[in-house]
Image (tube, rainbow, N blue to C red):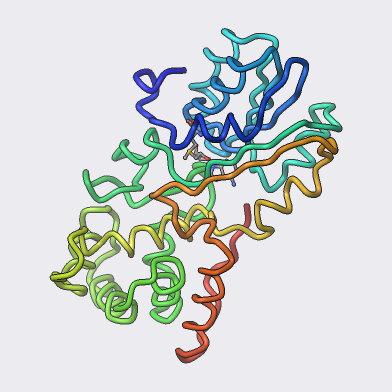
Length: 276
Ligand SMILES: C[S@@+](CC[C@H](N)C(=O)[O-])C[C@H]1O[C@@H](n2cnc3c(N)ncnc32)[C@H](O)[C@@H]1O
């Protein structure tokens, strides 16, 4: 599927496929199918098979045309890569030669206002990749002030997390916060302009909510998914962070830094549980 068809331009696609080194007769897992850019590139590189997983039902539906084009070499599965072992087993697959993960939000999700991932165009405050479960609006309107501050600090590294949380709680006394536009305005006012930072002041808070609502900060970590899945001894696994999902799979060094910073602050309740 081309970027023109899906609107998603895959990041580091060639590097990922080079690292996987697909071979004829091989079987690979694309754990974050999205617009199918990685999957197509793998299937074009060798006469191999791809099992593509995505938790977003829209991504799976849009991928049907690709599955037909590459039939029978492409299988699409709706689900979470954290359940890879079980999904593969249900599909009758016991061994794979490589796994690719491209963590984050796809353009198909980000650019559609109705999915509520972005403040660029106001839409319902949703942000659910799987289109089920608690939405960002539920989190914003239902979490207490401390929980909200935790989310903004932990997942967005928002230094004014407490101020943002307080502003949200004050506003929702009057009415439920329902749109990305409303929330962005509240955050912008709370954070104020920054001389150093040229990005929109709402960026960090939105990143944090995307992670919390979609549970992208995953437990278990993605690496464990393929360690548990049966992967052949010669297999390769590869993963890349995209700019939009920096925190969804931060390197160990960043995690240590965050843990130290969190310890310096007063301990707070943990944010809502996250699962892949
Ligand atoms: C950055 S996009 C992937 C783009 C893809 N590599 C391509 O070439 O088009 C990330 C995708 O991962 C999916 N995703 C995020 N978390 C997931 C999870 N835990 N399990 C399965 N899919 C997930 C999202 O729904 C989204 O479609």
